[in-house]
Image (cartoon, rainbow, N blue to C red; front, side, top):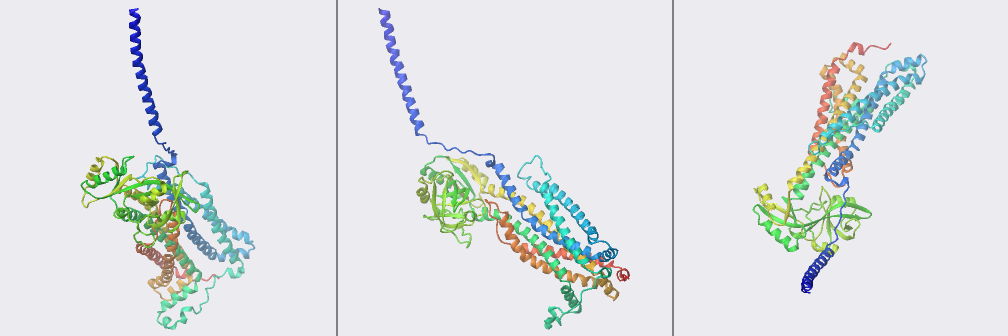
Length: 598
């Protein structure tokens, strides 16, 4: 009995302890359940491969190169087609005697034409193959090597793009063949007896300038001869003007594109974003804690100013157009934003003031959405609620898209307080940035610090790579200019060899003979250069607008240096070709050139 009572007593004691432990455990479970129910629903972000910074960065760079490559070749092909046209026309004209002989012997038009057509096709194929090897095997390595400072590419694939090869080959063959056929038909309409004799020079006649007697009387003899020859050979003058204009316009476009790209970093990270760096605050800070953190930052030695900023990425919609990855900036004090970010009107350059009742968007975003001041834009997350706000200003901006809102407007639109998540800061003159950054990282509530030079240096690396590509294009345009000038000058000499031999027989010195020809070439080339500089303004605007990608706006406009360099290079090429022509004129055999065909 006593043993039973002892056991019962022990049981009751242990039972009470166990029930107490169970009650405590149940209370803990209830608290845990309550804590779980109090937790906010997390937001999940699923990023595919294209969203990774490295992949998206190289993809954006490739898009920029692709945009440039889609425009320039068209202009090069047009100028090259002009060279083919003049060359084949000259070749057929030079073979007039042989064409006349073959016709007199009874050869059909097709048989006579086949020789020239075969030459044109073979020349086109050889040139196209050489160009494709250069374009598909060499230039890709040059372009990719420009990005070696930014990316590590283990190997470079440069496969033969048969579509491009066949397209270029087809255009080349069609250009040369069409010109050959048209020219041959024009020549073969002449009687064989007439073809076997040299082509009679064009009849001299009064020109328009002779009507302006006050000007004409003041010209020297050589000046009058030059003017008459220019107007006598109108087709050659037109070809020279068009050819030189095209090459000058291409060079101006290259220099303009270089300016449009290289000026972005200075404007965006030097004139618009004028803060020294930004730092990220810890998550879930209250407004008071964020304000205290800003005050603490201002107390760091070397910091001259600070401004709290709420940052968020949103989508922007208007008129059926949507732009993703738009940076929404909400400054804690809009009146204090100017020392850190300059909001300048994209048209007038005047300072914009951020105030309640509307937002300020950057220029590139306004173009993509096709909206302006007074229009409405919808902001929000993809798949979430969108808030409508009126655009009160369009600010200058070149990299990425930005929307600026006041804290009061943000709270009214999205129903939440815009507590600063970052702080922009400026440093005092002479402050050591490394020491300042180290001191900032030691502050409580600071997660990270990014110096403004990080962004500008990264963009400068990209600009340097694109500049190398632009220099390649400028070099190609310059080489094409030399080819065009030399080809047209050579045609001018070969077509007038009897005329030149005649004036040499009449006692003209080599220098005078050179002046006789080169004055015409120089005047025609200078006219082409002037036309090219005017045409290049449109070229630059077209290429810059076409080469832009969605997140970057190139700088529109042309500096005086672009015009000067383009004109100077063209003039140097003119003088270079004139020098080559001088030596070829000295080699003209007067006796051989003046021999009669009979």
